[in-house]
Image 1 (cartoon, rainbow, N blue to C red):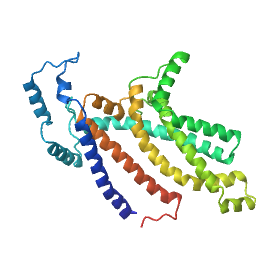
Image 2 (image 1 turned 60 degrees about the vertical axis):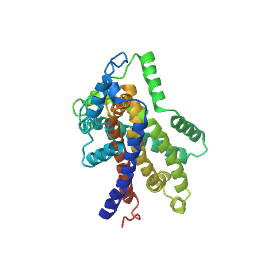
Image 3 (image 1 turned 120 degrees about the vertical axis):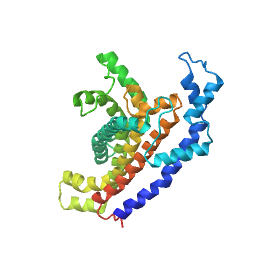
Image 4 (image 1 turned 90 degrees about the horizontal axis):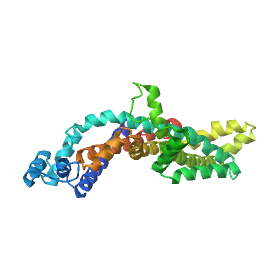
Length: 319
């Protein structure tokens, strides 16, 4: 297994390099100037002279050729130095370390909600195929799969405010500092974030369950007189969950990216809100660092999923 992990890590290198190249070039073709944003007054006007703008661009290092900027940033990133914010001068790595636990907790809570709700719903839908319950559960899944998370978030905030005079707490308390307040602040965002994952996992579970339940060993187990509950849970579910594991890993990586909008809606100071604020002011360094973190998270989740496969299916070999 060790050789397999090393091979996978080596294969990540060209992937992350292509990712860094794409995000670097895309940011440079966007309209706008970080130096103008820094020197602009609150009313939106620019009172600084052209000489002042050139001095600031030189200080920020954005007046150099693009290939030099890219090589320097890539070399520093490979050493774990994501640079400093162009807007406030703070180290990007330090800010990401502070905000990463918040985003990771939100994504994990969303994934937990998706698994806990999605797997049973998918299994029930498969067991009672083409029944009224199956149609209701499929409609339920398709609805949450089609509706954007941010729209659900706005409806939830509006509904809680109008009908219950309740507003989700603003700000953020880390779970190891104030667990109860932390759960209050992340409960609704995690439920909304997990709704799309729940729908996807539910549909995948239903499809794999239907496929497994048509296998010969399931018919054999039933012919032996084994209780239907035991056949479904012990024989069908374990084999049906193997594809769901892959989906769960990809869902977690997707939820990490999905926190970008929800953190903005609920005012959660995670990587997503940090990312959005950086885009508004064209802070290239922050955006590049956040994209690298999201990319590494996605690839790391895929690797973990592949390794977990061996536990669920001993036939899988990593030699």
